[in-house]
Structure formats: C-alpha cells, structure tokens
Length: 309
Length: 309
Image (cartoon, rainbow over all chains, first blue to last red; front, side, top):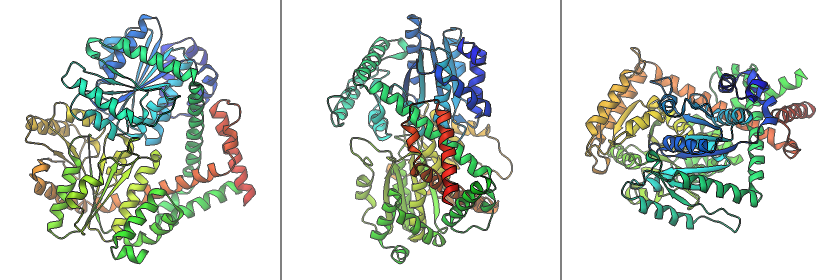
C-alpha cells in the first residue's frame, strides 16, 4: 500500500485517508511508514466565516496551480449535519469542477468525531497526500471555532477570507481569526463596502504587535467566482513563503507542527489507555464530586499500570 | 470563601471564576467543595453565528427573568482578539444595561487558552454561579466551532439563534448548529426573509430523526433589540424543560454532564502528569517519526510511574 500511495494511486490514497478518519490501527502503522516521505508539500490553510466563499477560492487557487502542472490536494473540513449524515455539499459540488483532473485530489472530512480528533485527522490526511507526492495541499475549514482554527494554523501559510458585508471583518476579529492570518483575502470584492473592509483590516493590523522579522500581512481583493485576484493570492503566498524561509521561520513552524503532532498522538493514546482499563466502573458509581471520582480513577489507573509491569 | 460564595458575595464569586480561568490549584479544591451546592440552577445555552444578536437576546432574556425576581448569571464566551488581549466588547457593552442590577452577574471568558480547556472552564464558572444561588445561568457562545458547541450542548436547554439573511440558516446547518438546538430563534425578524427562514428551518427539522419521546424543536421569531418575542422564548424554554422532565431526560442529561466533567478533569490531570515529568526531553531529540517518539514518551511515562510507586 505504501508503494501504491507513493506512486500516487488514487484508490490507495482514498483508502489511507479512510483509515485515518476511522482511527484504525492500520492508520498509525501506515502514517509511521509514510512519515519519511512527507515534508515536501506546501500546505495552505484557508479559513473564514461561513459564506465567505472559501470553497470557490480554494477551487480557483487549485486551478491556478494546475496551470504550472503542480499536483494539488484539497482537504475540506466540513462540519457534519445530522440531516445528511455527512459533509454537506462538499465533494459533489467540487467534483463537477475539478474532479476529472487527475492532478487534483479532493477529500471532505466531517467534524462528526470528537473535538480533539479533528485537527489530528485533517493533518494526517494532509500527510497522506504529502507522501503521495502532491505539491500543494490546501486545508479549508469553516473557521469560527478553536478546532477549525487549529487546522488552519498548522499550515505553512494561513489565509483568512472575509466578505465586505458590514461588520464581517469585525466579526472575524471577534472570532479569533485575525491572529492566525498570514494574510487576508476580501472576497466578493465587487460588492459595495470592499474598500472599507480592506481599510478596516489594515487599521486593525497596525495594532498588532510586530518586529522586524514579522511578515506584515497584506489584504488581497478577489472575486473568486470570476477568477479575479487569484494570481495576487498566489503571489502573496509565495511572498510569505520566501519571508518565512529567509527568517528561519519556515523550518521552525514545521518542527512545531511535528511536536504538536507528537503531543496529540501521545495524549490520545494515553487517554485511550486510561478509558480502556476498567476505570469506567467509577463512572456508574453513585455520583460524588467529580473531582473525587476523578482522583479515584487516576489512582486506580496508576495502580493498574504498576501491577502490569 | 465557600461561605461568601454561598451568600452571593459578588467579589468572592468573581475571584472564584478567576481561579477557574487560571486553572489554579485553589480552583479544584474550591469546585470540589462547592459541588454539593450545585444542581439547582437552570442552564440555558445560547449559540449561533457571529452577528445573530446573541448578546442582545441574552440581555433581554435576563431582564425577563429579573421581572420574576430570579437571579441570573451570564457566562459569555468571547473569543480572544490579539489586538485587545481579551474579550472584545463583552462586559463593557453589557454593563451599561444590566450591570447595576445586583441580581445579575455577568462574566466574559476568552478563548485564549487551549481548546480542551474552554468548555471545562465555562462549565466550572457556571458551577460557581450555581453554587452562589443564581436561578438561571445563560451560557452564550459564538457557535460555529466544536468547542463552542460543546459549551452550549451541556446546558439544560440549548437555543440556536439565526438571522433571516439569505443562506444564514443553511450556513448554521453546515456549521453543525442544527443538531444541538432544542429550539430555534430567528432574531431580527423584522427584516425581510424571516418567514422564509422559519420555513426553511421547519423543513430541515422534518428530516431529523425523531420518535415519540423527542421534543420537536419550535422556531420562535424575535426582535431582541425591541424586546419582541422574548416572552415566547421563555415559554419555549419552559416547555422544553417540562418535556425533558416528563420523559426522564432532564436527570439523564445532568448525569451525562457530570460524567463528561469527570472525563475532562481526569484526562486533563493525566496529560498534565505526562508532560510534567521529563518526557519533554524526547521532544528536542532529532525528529524521527512522531509515532515512534510518542511510543517512547509513553513507555518512559509508564516506567516512571512504576518506579515512583
């Protein structure tokens, strides 16, 4: 399977991501073996409030890179709807557009699972695409929540997309989006108020603490549906990449990403170990203070570990 | 301090919540001692996309309950902005409105900290208010992310607020809001399109799986700025409460909340224990596969535990 993924076999890639999503035992072994093949792809995070046109921008950017014959992987983190039981719109809409291009691989991931697992899974899916030889990986998330932000944050370049509707940039700031942006896109810039949005963001940026080594975020206007401004977005990505490399931040960010991954995996496994032992018994006891129950569970867990060894 | 909190002393309540926010050692001891005083307050979660008017609705609802002389606590989870270093708007705006009323306690909490900590802290702050004798506790969150949803979800009744802008209800559905709502509020219902929003939500609700014991969510129209529809919101909360009680779900939900808390506390402590030992050393090693580094860390952790006991 490793060989097949390495050669870019689409079915093996799809299956590997399914393993990752289901957190199967195979997935860890697989990711472990793929690790030495990763690190070559450039990861772009695209996030912003619902309705800002992230998917359209992602597709337009993918097409842009395809013109230079770069292979593009897209991981779209779509929240689950209980009505559809899966990612809404997502793949199907995109498929009509990019799906027939063998140089593009698109995967929607739903937020069905637990909180902590989401950014882990999205990054692991990106690792699979990285190992499979995709040059550009775009991680697209509905970014108005911590776990969604966490995904975008781990990218090499993170773009925050807003629309020129009244107050949208303020809302994005409230939602904590502003602090993770390497630069901004005001999409749907043919609508009234786009100039005001751009200057509102620029004003806010002045208050951001920065020194000489800080990449000063720019604001790019796009009309993604008409393919306008996509060139400028790609140029800004390149500028940010070069700035990071020349300031030694590119490598550092990747190291932190790996450390973060180690932390995630370790905590995940340790908690699995915790709840797989018989500590659940305490849960059904008469409910005392949760703090005391928790102490009992931990003591019991440590005791069990000691006995086992 | 316990006595002071019990008697409703505002300064002690404020200090207790600060302990909770900083995750100090005092906070756990305090919460442990307060536990037997909790369980009396009714918790209402209010969530929805940015700009839907959650704060205004929260304030209007608080004023409504004040008319019956019920004490109201408000925990507003405001994402952190790097520009202000704290909760934006938040307290200050509210203060002019409700702040002088001794029967209302308002606290903004920022999402500064780590992901997992957020819902833990918000719920613990609610526990403090519960122990202090507040009858109604409103947990207000910008609900377009998993951790924010988690907060709202733990409430006895969860309300999802949308506005009648085109596509807003669809976006709310995409963002996973729909599955957590006990009922819906279409706020700013004096704007065009409110009837369409109501029927769009009602249509979507038909596809939701339900049986006889399911509370069928209603859709309430409000203009919170003009205090319109607030009465109806309160009635719907009461209806949901009674339905939950008569179907035995009220108690079950609270039990799950406590179990969830036990899980959170235990995992939090265990992970603290993990990283407080010298496992960090592996992090700075030459970076091998994170899966192998993680294995080493876990083995080392288990070994250390065994040695210590």
